[in-house]
Each structure stands twice: as C-alpha cells, then as structure tokens.
Length: 114
Image 1 (cartoon, rainbow, N blue to C red):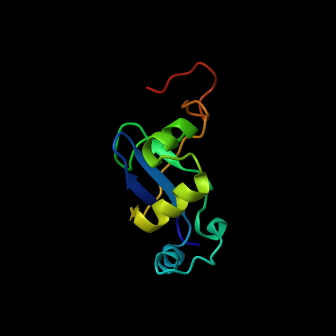
Image 2 (tube, rainbow, N blue to C red):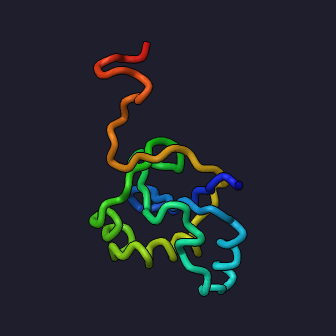
C-alpha cells in the first residue's frame, strides 16, 4: 500500500494541506477526469492548515473561517478540488492534529519526557 501524499497550497496567510492516497488518480483528475469520486482520491476528507507555514510541522483541521478567508468559501468540496488541481504534491505524509491534545500517549498522565 502506498503511503499517503500531501498536496500543499501556499496561502496568503497560512498554508493548507490535503492528504491523498494515489498521486496517479490526482494526475488523472488534473487531466480532466472529474468522474473520479473525491473520496477515492483523498485519504482524509478534510483540509488541514499549518499556522507556522510550510508543509512540515503540526497540521490542524482548518476552520470554516480560515477556509473562507483564503479561498472565499468554506465549501470543503470546492476547496479540495482546487487544491487537487493547483496544489503541489509533497510526496510524503507526516502527522496531523485533529483536535487532540499534543501529549505523548505512551506517557502516563502528568509525566513529562526528558
């Protein structure tokens, strides 16, 4: 199984990421084959944001207001389509953050890694 890729969108204030399963499907989609269901292309049907800039680092799910500020809409379908066509493939996926706290789950409560 291929490792998911990141499609990266360089925003004016923040950078956005969509995770894709198969870069070949993205190429077909870019080539005009819009019959491919988006759910078959993206591995996680969400748009992520990196508030520090770039494609590395902690990625959080983008809020509707962040999407609207960058793309003029909070329509996730339309934004994913735009990133699929105009985004840059970063060829590897890192970790993402979707509302969980950033503690190390292998540590007990209150413990700090040294």
